[in-house]
Length: 288
Ligand code: BEZ
Ligand code: FE
Image 1 (cartoon, helix red, strand yellow):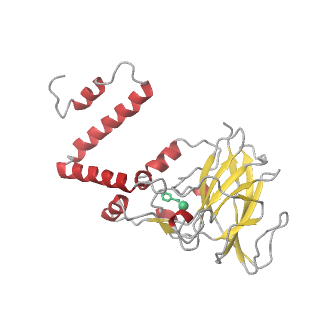
Image 2: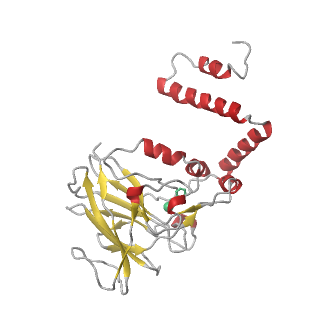
Image 3: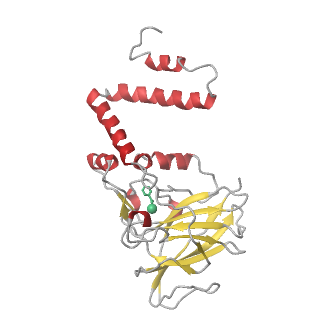
């Protein structure tokens, strides 16, 4: 096609694919171009707007490091990460939710009943539950990778005052699939706003807050890995998570407990003198 017009450019684009192109690549990129062209026509994108978008991507590239990926954050606040997550989730499993950028590899092993608080002192939270399969049977020995913010709202990789492994731990569930640990109650926090994503949120009149949450990756032989988060029902940002990560089955009540009222069945390594809160959260894994 020699003459390209606004009406035929999408068709021309499709005709440029080579005969040996991988069919899935062709489907995905062809559809992406189709939607980008339609979007451009629909909003009548100006040169100035197009240039600003490219400048935002250039800025994102400049500030992206292994510890902070502005492109992932852009995908998160646009709802793309959560949408990919939801359309690929498996029925019968606990809902998955965003991984976020603060997971670390090789988290330190924790025994069941261990404490994550380190030197931090705040409201104590006892987290316990069971890993089960879709029929309700326990999954013995499941591996549970756990991470969260410190009470100052920072993950260890954001905070020079914390050891990189602070509030990170790897627990192996017992023969009944059970796990338990004590920690401090995580707090609501803002996603980073000093880059192009912050400017987009600001221009859209959106806040950068996430409701407080505990992060988990649960793995067991023969089962699909589960990446998820657990949120307290009373968090003020529950209905407006800036990265769209909340699912109803991930919202739990953190129940206040009087001092000394620990459940039987496991020993706690950390000292808990006063009242504390407790959350019981069970994970359901589905087979591969
Ligand atoms: C997080 O939960 O750690 C997170 C998720 C998405 C963007 C920023 C942080
Ligand atoms: Fe988080």
